[in-house]
Image (cartoon, one colour):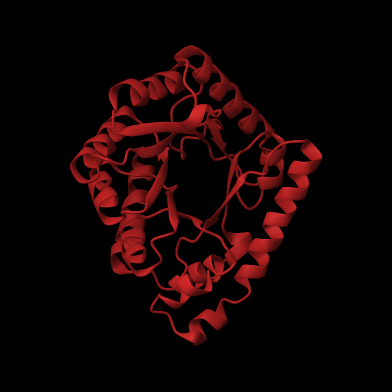
Length: 272
């Protein structure tokens, strides 16, 4: 991994500033492994959420073998990806406007998965973008489900709506591969009901649509963030998205494009 890190144009001083990231990632992995052993199941994938953090912070994670990183803003990810190692597996986890699907797919060749597909319209936009720019590499996606019922959160309603979204992705989007379901729990509260709801929906989707993930594996459950990833793991999460407990709350000055995108997303949410 050291050779990979050395290929990026980041100064030694910048890397030193973020040197604490690597040990925290290793500690978090060890915690997840120990918890998984206790539960008698595989440890969930750790996605290090690097939104608003500099490239040096990402490289500090890469140096200890962390390759799964999550980003929330298309503009920021499109700026970062070309400057960072191609081995990184980028997870897009933020709200994605349908008109941003094409720029995201075209701008990030190593886009590993879009976890936040919340409508058939977005799914079709992604499908068309993949067909146009990388037809030989179907894109992994997850269906986002609003298990908390909060108006401020995106996602299909649990139950019939979630099943129909998954059906549409599976049957109507030949360039997408449905690999799982994702949710965001309630902030600052016990989220076990949200996590259990997502697991129930995953099981219903798998049964009614007779689909599994790649290689016949069970559809994934992406749930759990810095404040609740332990509880999510206990509830069966296979993919946890951890940001502030790894990188801290410090943020660098975002690019104007990323800032504009964030403001547009906030405005759209408030208009709902």
